[in-house]
Image 1: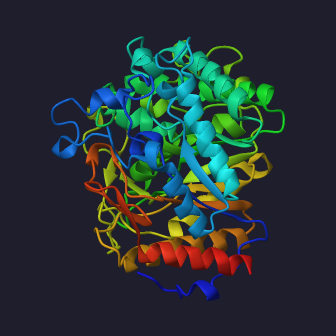
Image 2: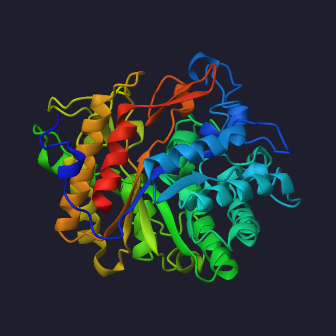
Amino acid sequence: MTTRSTDATRFPRLPAGFTWGASTAAYQIEGAADEDGKGASVWDTFVRRPGAVRDGHTGDIACDHHHRFAEDVALMRRLGLDAYRFSISWPRVLPTGAGKVEPRGLDFYDRLVDALLDAGIEPTPTLFHWDLPQALEDEGGWLSRGTAHRFAEYAAVVAERLGDRVKRWITLNEPFVHMSFGYAFGVHAPGRALMLDALPVAHHQLLGHGLATAALRAAVPDARILIANNCTPVRLRPDARQDEDVAAASAYDALHNGIFNDPLFTGSYPDLTAYGMADRSWGGVVRDGDLATISAPLDGLGVNYYNPTWVTAPADPAAGLPFDLAEPTEPYERTAFDWPVVPDGLTELLTGLKDRYGEALPPVWITENGCSQPAGLHDRARIDYLAEHISAVADAVSLGVDVRGYFTWSLLDNFEWAEGYHQRFGLVEVDFATQRRTPRASFAWYRDLIASQRS
């Protein structure tokens, strides 16, 4: 796979002030699922559905980060991180999603933020990383417009407590993935299989983002606000039928990338006629003033990248979607998750965003990028993966894309959603029976890279 040196001391130079970080998410690492007054999230419910998660795994304990965060912050200090991206558990702060605040939940994030700052690491919280309070799901979840308003109220509560120390905020993580996996296909929490009827979830998440952005700016005037979107370059196979497959690629791009980026930077949704939605109000879901709220200026776009997506025209147009997903014909190496390893896709994605949005595109931060590899400490394949993808970021910077930081996924092995504990993304190996943390070879490589970039 690797075509360039992985020697950390001979690596392309990223701009001065470039931020080096690592990412995690609350349900995937915290554990303490029912401690200190925390309410149930949709994931607490979903993992108890028979067959929903491999081998019946749950996040009840996960990495026990709620109790072991000081040990994890010490690992981050050893890495030399500039910043740590974590998520705040909405039901830990507001057990029913609204109303009564649980002070013990805020106290935990107070302690975490202080520990990070003491270690010289900038806290970068994400407000929503898929763990919606179950009480709000019972009222319709993100299918309900009211959830967007509850999200803004939650953002205000957290900002009031942490905003004196936290300045960089991320509103949502991967709203496309949450909509599609959680509401369209039902393979993630909350487990609804609504197909195209899930589209209101996209708008309500983005409306929640816009309302939360206003709430954050009101509470923290010097806040720097991002959203973390999962983005993918859309590719055709060499045997593509030009007209049909190009149309399919355009339709997929609108669904995966356009719906979640266009409103932010153009103030409008892409054309969804291919999905039978010529009505730009989405049947009344999009109301007057919503797009102005959503397109309020941002301080950055978070980009989560793992691989391109290949599409073809649908084999059965009557099946309901204007595309079929396809496998690449190229012999790419694969991660343990069987995802193709395509570093140049990240350069393609970043330059494509610049071309698409021009001056409207704010600075970009790579908020997730990493790979699952087999368990074990000598993870040479992960080092190669990181080296190639960070080089791809450097290539994009050389082509004029304003990239300000890179957060690898993930600091720790963790609960990988429907895969349970079967996928290992961490720079640090976690023995889930003992909770012992052991840094992998990739930990040392990333540490050396960060040190070299600063020297």
